[in-house]
Image (cartoon, rainbow, N blue to C red; front, side, top):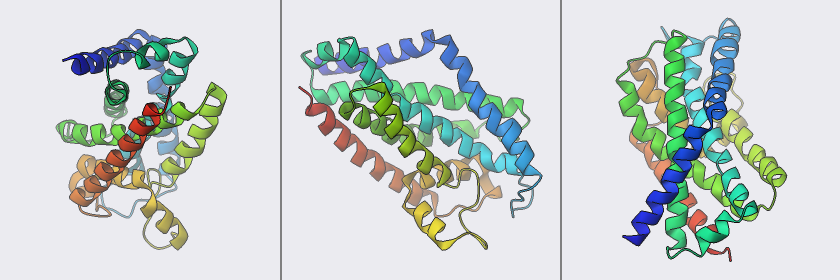
Length: 255
């Protein structure tokens, strides 16, 4: 019971911090709005998706959902550095719960925050006139949860090795940008005209499978997935398990 109570307390703390930060909630609309309303509309006149009935804005919508999950999840690691600066992390580490429970509590709390922001992107997409079946949100939620587990783990792992916010931001941007731009979130990574080296790099990027899984569920029959959905989910699960294992070790090495 002590372990469960500790996990719940850390989860609840992350949720309360998020809900009390109104500026963060409002700002979560800004970046997706820029990508969907401006980038999606402007380039939509230049980039044609070779699939009948599918606009460029609809094509990038799942990618922007994935982008929101990516940036929100990874940057959650900042909270670990803040907790260390103010001494709260030291109090957590000496609490009578395992390091795995500490990591799990932070992981679940940060994942919940990212899921909330991902849902807000769905609301924003509907307001912008992007057509999708509202029921797909229920199908996309389990995939979104799986995606956030691995991405939050990245942020927590980086934060466990960093001593300053500046160093954390530098490393995280070095991770985020390639994962996002080489995932096919904004452009097709297959077909004529796509360099072979780009296709190889994209296939090696685990976030590619996450974005394509979201696109498969959200767009339905309008989209032809890179791989069967179960294969893409298997890759995401393996990615999650590997990162959670590394994250638990990284937290366990702290004294």
